[in-house]
Length: 340
Image 1 (cartoon, rainbow, N blue to C red):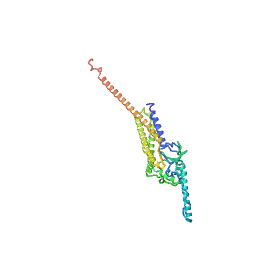
Image 2: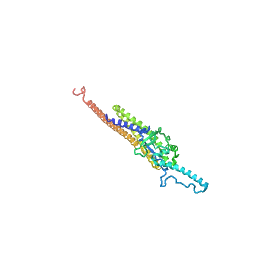
Image 3: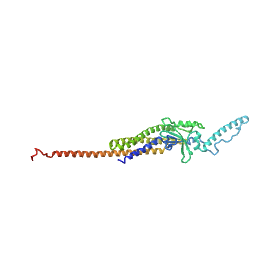
C-alpha cells in the first residue's frame, strides 16, 4: 500500500479542484465564461419584427397631394397624407437600419445584451466580440450578478426592463414570448439553487476525502481497517453528491436549454447547454469513483489479511494446546513410577 496510497490522494485532490471550478465558473467577468450551464443568445431577439424586403420596397410611395379633392379640402387632405407618410417613412428608415445588420444591431436597438450566461453561483451578460456573426466570436462580459437565489434573477423581467428602455419601447409579449417559454424560464432558478447546494456539499466531502487520504498514510499501519472504512465512507458520500449534481445538470438544465431553444428560436432567442461544464463535472465524479474503488479494494485486502491472521492464530493456539496435552501425558519421575 506504500505507493498505492497516492492513487486516492491524487484523485481526490484533482476532483476537488475540478469541483471548485464547477462551482465558481463565471464568478467574475471573464473567468471561465465559456463554462456556463446555459447560455442565452439574444443577438437576434425580435427578428420577427423586422419586415422582409419586397420588390416594391418597404417605404411608402408618393401619393396625390390633393387626395383628388377640390379646393381647401384637397389641401387639408394632402397635408395630413404628407404627415402620415413622413411618420411611416421614419419608422421604415429605423427598421431598415436594424435590417442592415440584424445579428449585430438588433440587440442594441432593442436595448438588450447579446448573451446571458447562467452559472451555478452567478449569471453574466455581455456582447460577442468582434460581433455575433463572427466565427469563433468571444464573450465580452460586461457584468455578473450576485449569487443566484430562487426568484432573484428573473430573466423575463430583466428582458422586459431592458426592452422598455430601448428606442422601440417593446415588451416580451410584442416579440411573441409565450407562456410555455415563461414556464421553462421559471424552472431555471430552482435548478441552479439545487445544483449550488449539492455541489457545495460535494466539495466539502471531496476535500475531506483528500485530507483523510493524506492522514491515512500515517494512521493505517496502526488502525488499518478503521481508517480504511472511514475513507471509504467519505469517498462514497462525495461520489453520491457529485452524481446527484451532475444528474441535475444533465437531466434538468440541459433539457431545459433545449426546450427554450426549441420554443424561442422563432422569436430569435437561442439557448445552448454548456458541454464544457458538463464534461468537467463528470470528470470530477469519475476521479472520485477511482478513489472510492481504491478504498474498497484496500478494505477487501484488509479483510483477507485479518482472515489469514485469524487462521494463523487459531492454528498456533491449537498447536500450543496439543503440546501442553502431550507434555502432561508423559510419565514423570517419582514414587509412582514402577521402576522405583
